[in-house]
Image (cartoon, rainbow, N blue to C red; front, side, top):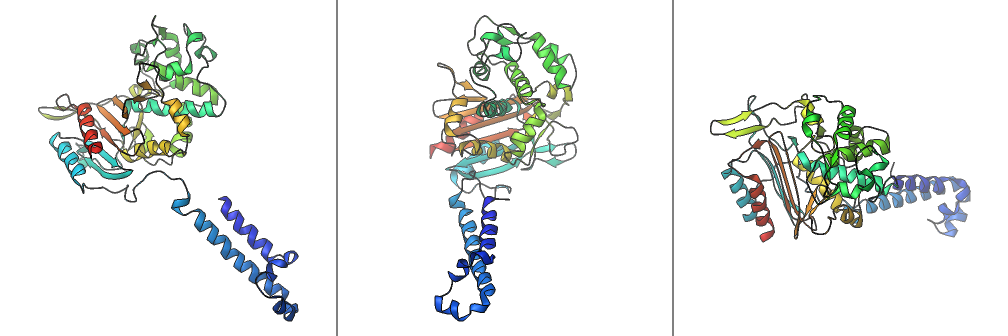
Length: 400
């Protein structure tokens, strides 16, 4: 129960309690009080009534939107938002010309200007993509694993400078690899991913064990995009919290952020889209095994709707879960590099990108988080380069 409601109860109790008769006297003159000396109890209840009204007023005031921090959202976010200006109309025209399949969410000055789904969620069953359709976000999930690491740092369980050897001493050179090195993919860690794939299992304990067993270290520690860093960071989190990554993600991201359309891969989840290759003959579906998704522990096995992904990022900018200082620390790359914690920290924007099993996700947003575009697609096309498309559309958002 919010603390303001306890305030109402306390005010009402004190006002009605005969031991606090002054509360009744406060609302009437002394002469009237003496004249109705035998009706004290009635006066106390009148005092309580007016105090209760005062308490309700305070709660309404405190809960007024201008007096509380909340994510930048649109009242109609859960509904399709058609283009209503030149910018959004131009963006939609480009998406249609490129035969985009997925969900596009565009925001400018903190307001959603386009939120619309295109193409098929399941072509065989003739189910169209909708705003509630979930797409695998691939490596964009690395940023969320990094967020969980930051929460562990805030809780005093971990530090950026702590060494990997505290958790996996058997990994070569782990005594010289810091948590920050892994977040920034400058650790030198490598792995033969085929060894993990050969397990053909969804057992994350076995996947972690093989990852640790197969890990090697390159002679250079310059930036190199290696997912093994985030698989091991997921393992670090499991050791710190003595629970599996999936439960940790459920509690600290899905529940903490109030996400409604976010889940791990499940063949039974009807909201998760199927993914396709684009060919001259049309869309070609190819199934992906559950073990293939499980191999992406902490790095790329989450499905989200565009709205949930938008809400996740806006919550970070609104200091609901991290302060600006904490977010800046988390997203800070090493000198001469741009990657940190699932984010490419570019000159005038932040960028995140994920690819998994023909799904592709693009996130571009301004340094203040007020302008941006999110594209979630379930069709992989060599002809239509969605990476350049995302950049092109973002430039339209910030150009005016």
